[in-house]
Image (cartoon, rainbow, N blue to C red; front, side, top):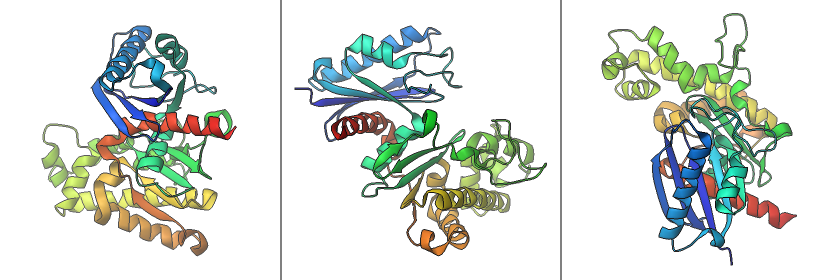
Length: 325
């Protein structure tokens, strides 16, 4: 009987591979640097080798696996089987990842973009447990979102739902330009990449942010650390971040009226006092009370365990979809 699941989380620098039972409990796991041979087919064979090794550690083999769930950076194609051209995976252009892994392992493989996979993980194992309508929002280099609606992952047409980072939160010719080419996107204000570029231009030389960064480029993490020490520039930066993040959540609230918005990365790291409480207060002010009273804003809970859970969440979602048909 196939009673094991495999989860693979492919990042720009690390790959996490885990084996779990049919409830998603992790039995064995491994992490290593992302292979960068310049040959995607060779890289995928190396990933398949990781799967075999961690399965052996768990006392199993590919024959025992019901499904392999894969979390990978987008963009993916409309069928959800190919990785098109992720910015942090050199030479991975139009890679038929599902077909190659199925060929190497002889097991069903399901692929999701990393935001959807993280949403599934937080919903099943983290802060979203017990809710049917969950929006997971992450602010790493860019801004991504995954939507769990009615207890199912919602992908939308062409699997393009959840691009919350490109909803408008500012207008006018002086609105910040986003990496997508448009102005005023949420990502241009709370995305880690955009924030880091702005900090390089605007951090005062005498601020605590500059001191913490030293010879390195200042980052949002330096802002959070300096804000905890009461630095005026850092506190103003956090207020700006919170203001725009709240606008994004208000857009989500009016559109989807979820039970919970789970915030990852920058917001979760900043914590209650610097981010979560002020964001909740702004959202409460701007949303209709009937929506706001039924909306919780929570920090992501999985932290460093997210890579081990993301692929398993994808596999469990596929098993659930199959059982429902």
